[in-house]
Image 1 (spheres, rainbow, N blue to C red):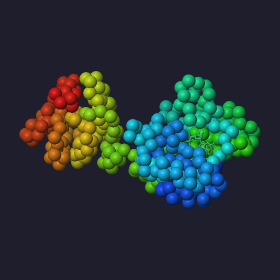
Image 2 (cartoon, protein in one colour; image 1 turned 60 degrees about the vertical axis):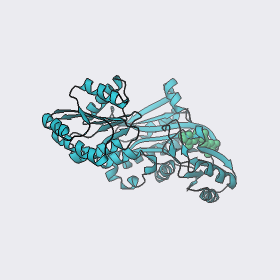
Image 3 (cartoon, rainbow, N blue to C red; image 1 turned 45 degrees about the vertical axis):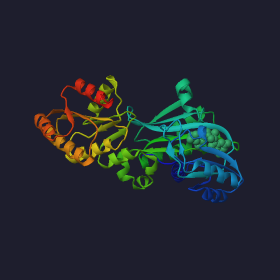
Image 4 (spheres, protein in one colour; image 1 turned 135 degrees about the vertical axis):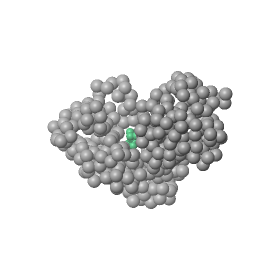
Length: 388
Ligand code: GDP
Ligand code: MN
C-alpha cells in the first residue's frame, strides 16, 4: 500500500525527520487558505498522486502570490496526472499540498527497501539526487552507496555517517543526516514499510538537511496490525479491479491485453501468460485464484475478468490438485449465468475430477470450449480473442 506525499511527510515529522511547512487543499479556494496558513509570498504547489515524476509534467509548481497558488491548484485539481511512473491513463489529482519553498543548495537521494535475498533492509544514498535518479542508477551505479542493516541491531550510527560522508556532507550536516537515517530506520520497523524514498533530500542554502519529497510503501501483509496506516489508504489512486480482487483474497493484476486469464497457482499463471504471448495473444490480467479455491471465489474472479470491456476471450487454466475440477466447473457455470457472458471461454481443466468437471461444462449449454492440451488451448483462445 502507498501513501501520498503529504501523509508520508506527516509521518516523517513524528520520527524527527525535518520537512518543509505545508498545508493540504482540495479546492483552489482551500489552496489560497492553505497558502495564507503557510505564510510568506512564494509557495510550491504539489499535486498529490501515488506517483513520482510530477516535477517533469507540471505536477510541482513554484509560484508567487495567493492568486498564483489558486491558479496552480485550479490547473491541477480534477485532472489526471500522467507521469513516467503512472500508466497512460494517469492518476486523479484530488488534492494539492501547498508548501513553503526551500532554498536548495544540493539535491541528494536516500532510500531504503527490504532486500528479500539478503533478508535485510538496505539503505541507499547518492549525492546525485533530484529528478534523474533512475538514469544515475542505470549509467553510473557507483554514485549510489548501499548499506545493509542487521535486523536485530538496526541501523548503526556509523553506517549512517558512512553514507553521509560518501555524499560529501559537512560534519554538522552528517549529524543531521544521521538523525534522519535513525528516524527512518525506526519508522521502517515500527510501521512495516517495504520502501522509503526521499528524493530529493536537500541541503538548504543555510546548510540544513530536509526531506523535500517523501514516498512510503507498506507491506500489505502487515496492514492488519497497522490500522492507522490502513486507514490512510486512498482508493482513488488504486486500480478498482485490483482492489475488488483483494477483498476476495484473489491475486489479481490488471494488464493491457484482451485475453482474461483465470488460473490457480502463481507459477501456472505465469506459464499461462507466457504461452498466450508465445502464440501471439496479450493477457488482460494476471489472476491466481489460489490453491484451495472455492466456487464462490471462482465466481468472483470470473466477474472481475468480465468487468473489463477490453476482454474479448477468457482462458481458464486450472490444475485440480487440492481443488477439484468439478467444483471449479460449478463456479464457472454460476459465474457465466450471473454475468450474462457474451464472449468465448476456453477452459482447460486437468487433475482431480477433471472428467466430472468437463461433463458439467458440456451439460451446462454455455459457450465454453473444453481443451485439454495447453498449446492447443492457448492457440484456441488467441484465435477467439481475434474473432476467429
Ligand atoms: P517528483 O518530481 O514527483 O519527484 O516531485 P518532487 O517533490 O521531488 O519535486 C520535483 C523537483 O521540484 C525537485 O527535485 C526540486 O528540484 C523541485 N522543487 C520541489 N520543491 C521545491 C522547493 O521548495 N524549492 C525549489 N527551489 N525547488 C523545489
Ligand atoms: Mn521526488
